[in-house]
Image (cartoon, rainbow, N blue to C red):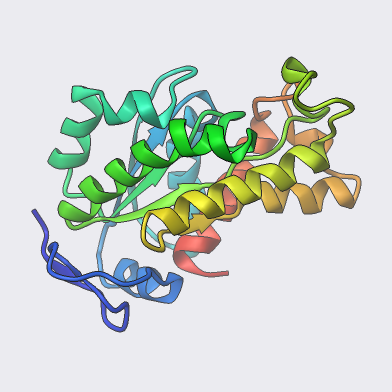
Length: 228
């Protein structure tokens, strides 16, 4: 296990004490590691991101090792109960572990999030910090036409409405996990949608990312981890 103190972050990554994570401290840590190790924990939205992040990191002349423990449709609740996921978190000497919730769940109501999302998120973040890594949440994007699979809960839904709910859901999870960082991928997609160039980011189903969407999302991670 790595026992790494992040200068200025207000906490020691060995379970001694903790205060809110900071992006500048994370970037400082990654600058001081020759080949940072990053793990994605999520589902199909994260399938192709590890490889894409390796590619785009080369643009800033950084070598990174990026792996994933990702299963289609999985929630953080399933990952928190998975021996495989916990073994990967514990065994990889990661610098960063990225947590991605099922694409709709963070946009559900607060009561649902408090039951289904917050407890496993807190458990996974605690495990990540125990192993000396920095947890970050992967804020995903709203579906192109909103959540039409839950029309009773969200009548006349749109991308913008769903994205707003996702932002709230991930912020709540991060706050509940003692100030974990959130990589605002969905907000970057929202800017593209507002500018009229966002639909290219979606695959044919209006939910999963196209190749352009994967590369765009990887670019957001690159900038978050290594700066512009």
